[in-house]
Image (cartoon, rainbow, N blue to C red; front, side):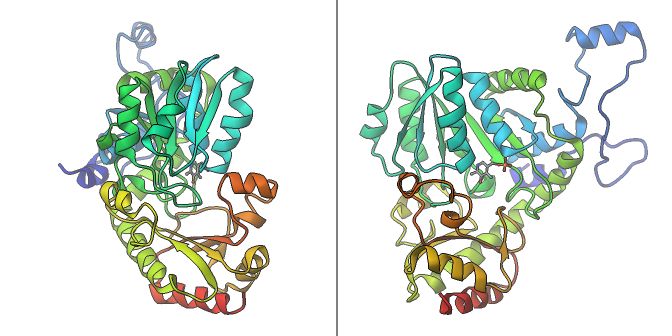
Length: 388
Ligand SMILES: *Cc1c(COP(=O)(O)O)cnc(C)c1O
């Protein structure tokens, strides 16, 4: 079966009720018929569920569906994307290790790397999003353990070359851990390029309707087992209810992403030469600086479009204030189109220099293109641009 079919058909075993849709296992723990069975389960002699912090059938269904889409061996699902990121760091690195990453990275991940990991003696180096192979290699130290990256990056839409970086990781015996949240497995499969681990904030495109938080890390069995052991003791398990919602969402991920991406390409093309816009980025526009890499490793350009308003921070505020249809919210990857202005919101607490360091320019607008009619989305953006 093709991955899309598996993402629709893989399910928990049908119960004696013969239900068509998967049942929801909203239970914290599981029962045993007798003391001997219970002993054998706890001794790992029998493979059975124990407690939903360890495993749960509804959560397993979600994991198996994501594994099919990412062509991964196995996975562990977490309460949010950030708990997946954090668990992948804490389970696989220790005091004295070094993490190599890229300065264009999701804000909370940047906080974990720069403020939390140092408390545990794990240091890091950032290279820039357009670093060459030589620059990546030069940043490797004798204690480097892992390369962690995001592509396309949030919110700047930089594209990093998975094939190039994966070759460097292999050559130097480093783990390659990729946050694939923006592309989704429909848009890009990092494991095909040699990634050892792939992370998702399922909160975004996977749920796709702005309802539940969730996260997952999938990849090599040996590594996932370490992450599982870390999580089963520390407790960031995904709620079975959220897993059940997310599994239903995966059944439509392919068709949704196709439309998100075609709407986004249309919006990007229509706005590219707009008078109020200094520059615009979309991975599948020939004007994108890493267009060739995007075309090589992505099946579509994704649902996010970024542009820089000529009027800077004031223009950014005016743009948000004049939108009528688009939602102003911190999320992305929704059926409803969302606009955000990082400089005055998510990155407002950073100094101008810190914002520059992570490529947040004053007039940067990020549009998460939804599933409304493309002309309604465009019309709202155009009328708000008139007032900037
Ligand atoms: C949102 C996001 C995360 C964090 O996910 P949560 O589910 O919000 O914890 C991680 N990486 C990227 C690229 C994101 O956009």
